[in-house]
Length: 282
Image (cartoon, rainbow, N blue to C red; front, side, top):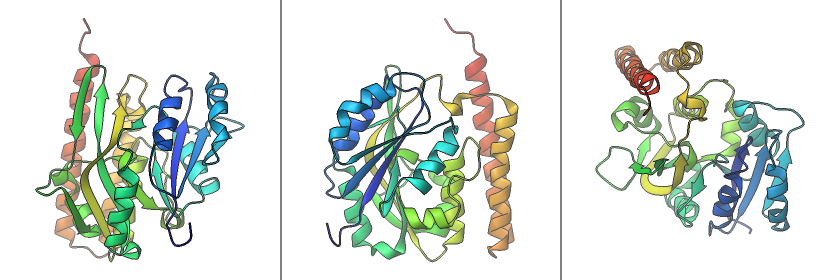
């Protein structure tokens, strides 16, 4: 529709046949009027393609199967750079699903009401589900929704203690121009958004407690690994962000405090993850 910003729901997937239909159907249930859905199958060896076929009658859906396995981050990048065409993008991994059919329409309405050209991204929240356990994870803030500066988002990131990839709408063109998903690390999503904040200090970010859906946790999640090398590579992203903040002439002491907080948080989270993974299971 003319004048209505379009939104692409990217659904990267690899061997997630048990979840993919639910993910796609939850995307189709979104009531926003200008949506495209790109299912990016990273050369799955299960029956993902067979399950997707009946859904392709809906013109909103585009199914892409990579000729070779690109890996998690490579699949993100390929989908964003080569297959998504909409103005705005939201990423829904193939094992997650939306529960709020009005999430995108509400987010886009909020973005437009705050002058769309001034907004870098909108970040809502999600329900974390692991087995029978369900927990709403939301940013630590006093209001339900707030429009803040990118500087505020960056430097108070650990105070807010929150990030949600599956509930973040972002401007596709700005993401592409600024090397989104270039680092093949565990937290490539967090790094991409924090880097974007440092590069666009005049724009705003909307943070919200608006729930998008369910982030499903299971033992095959990439973030579950306790191997030291991927976590060391992941930690180095904070050093990159620290140097980028200094380069952008932010206060050096403020930048150093941010790096110390980042280091402390990362070490603590890793230790708890290590304990949880090594604890004997009943």
